[in-house]
Image 1 (cartoon, rainbow, N blue to C red):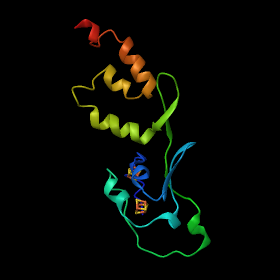
Image 2: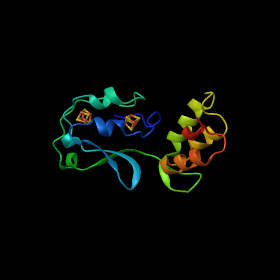
Image 3: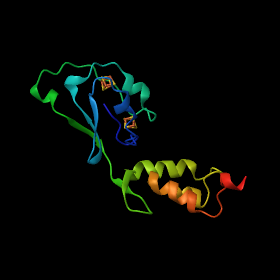
Image 4: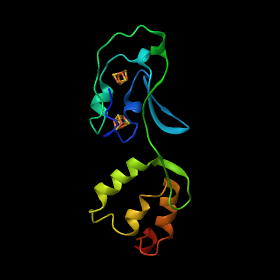
Length: 136
Ligand code: SF4
Ligand code: SF4
């Protein structure tokens, strides 16, 4: 069982699942579940940082249990610099909200969180106000 309102689609549970019961989708921000594979180990519940998952003990013998079921999906987020899709709108907004008051994430540093991994590196190395190892 999943709480879609609190799930940020971070996919930590997919990495934790030892039975490939939880899966992502390479083409879209989605979390999918194949009931037949689940061994009810509970690792996904323990791993979820948002406490969005709960186990529901049951025995499903129907053919559908082998089919992936969509648990949650989200709108993808486009990098503000290059437009490449990465992460989700909800996940990025949550991160911005949590870090907005942090002294290390003000101005350009906060804006950098809206960029994909490649553009963050380019932006850091092209910014005039960043410290460089060659300055030491
Ligand atoms: S259920 Fe939890 S661990 Fe899985 S994607 Fe959602 S927030 Fe991440
Ligand atoms: S309880 Fe099921 S879905 Fe969760 S980690 Fe274990 S096998 Fe995967």
